[in-house]
Length: 161
Image (cartoon, rainbow, N blue to C red; front, side, top):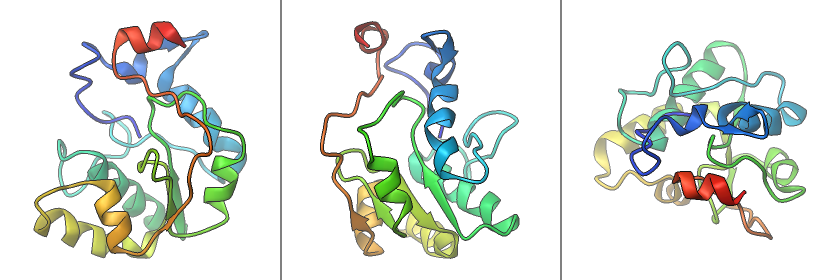
């Protein structure tokens, strides 16, 4: 997931370089061992947020669910582009269960595509659009990270990695 305004970063953090690759490619590389197809949601020319842009991570998840369902997939594994690496075993644990999420970083999740309608209703009717709130509302299984997750919100965050 590479949407968002990157307001604290000051420029498009999905395209920020770390170890010779942009952050969005680090995220894609994390997913590749766990999925049949790895795509970027929330960027120009990629999968658009639903039901519209600029509504936060839930819009990216909805876009990804729609994209996956239209291609015959039954679930989506999500990771944010500002998490260039994750604790060992976390994506494996998430990928073994649907629907599941990491309470330490709720955008990390494994979501059934059949939840798209529920998510679109949630986006339109619940004022606080939090991934954690939606995950709890659908009864998703919380899977703790077990270790700190790096999160790049500012250029200084990137410099410390």
